[in-house]
Image (cartoon, rainbow, N blue to C red; front, top):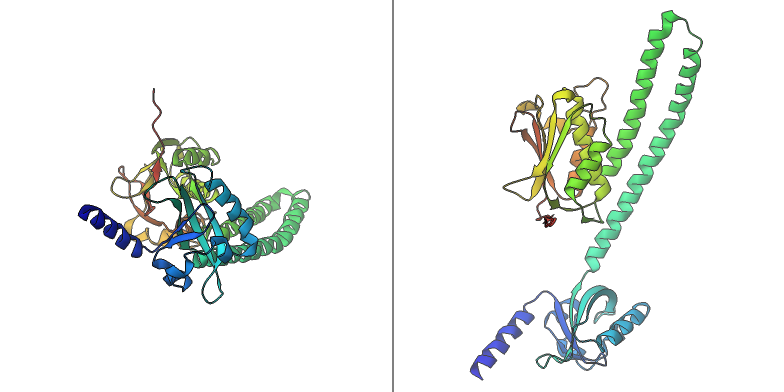
Length: 350
């Protein structure tokens, strides 16, 4: 009996100090136990909830789903599900509560449906703010790009007319005009990409790094360069933006080196959670390694200087960090630290 009392006291104190609320319901959905954290979140004593039907505190618009879930829990032992519902506190304010319910009615030590719940109101508010901010930024970039492309298209049309009617003496001038128009088109496209790349990532999924890297390589003019990929990482990320980051890193390597003798490698970091992209080219001087991520920095007179700035913004939008150092063979090595531990895809069994 002494050991049992010690065990009961231990688990009681663990529950009391948990940041999550723990609520136990009977088969009818009536509260039989509520942990101390209920007072911190909802402002009421845990004992006040005991004897109440949990659905009575749920917003009317969210009750039907909860009642359907409870009906499911009442018939299948061990069944679990997660849902979000609005719950009112002692002051009558609504909180978004995320709860994971587990049917333990047939467990003699529990005899109830256990709800492990947390307040996600602030998390949802921040997510909505980020989504609205992203939408405004995207709208602004789209309008600017549209307004710039209209006069650009007119200029391209005029250049086409001139090219068909000028003599050989002025062909070089027309070629120069066309190069500048092409450069303006590239700047508009890259500016739009840059604006969108900085949008905070709100939706992620496990992405196979090798698959994305090879897909990006296939969409870039690699001009005879070779790609080597040795990683099984699957980081939580926005797939489209990660694809864009790889495309810009590959393009940067190819455009600044002799592509016919170039090898680009993608692999996992050995000492941190993350991955690297490195090449066997001429590298980037140590004094320039911070500056290369700035918007407009380029050593190519036809370049926009936005490529690595786009990569930087995409990395930061994920909450990651990027650094530039020297590769094993003297080329440029970009290291992306993910902070969380990315999942590794399983190795196929032969």
